[in-house]
Amino acid sequence: MNITEQITADIKTAMKAKDMATLQALRDIKSKLMLEMTKDGSDGIDEGVGIQILNKLYKQRVDAAAIYKEQGRADLHDEEMQQAEVIKQYLPEQLSPEKLQSTVEEIVARVGASSMADMGKVMGIASKELAGKADGKDIANVVRALLG
Image (cartoon, rainbow, N blue to C red):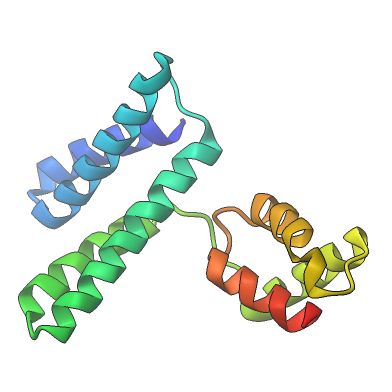
């Protein structure tokens, strides 16, 4: 079952359970996936692209929740965090800081990077290999620490 089929099935479940927060998040996911599918006229979506879309939606929810928290809007903060948790269920497991460190060290060794001038090469490979498993900012911080 691909991600689009899974989301559709989960929408039906949320509708039956009358879980409006989950339903709203799932409908948002489905609409973004459908938009992506209609761009090239295909009847499916690549798993990698689906994960990128989910990551973007998750980050948007977390960022919005942080803004609402700053403004003292606990009701909107809680709603955004609920939706972020729903989206997070469809994302791959995030790497621990230790695993991220060791993976980036292995990539640096494989590329033969030794200075900040090689950061672009390392980031290109690391971003592809760790897509969906780690945040780009976290990857960049680890690469800077290793090469700096």
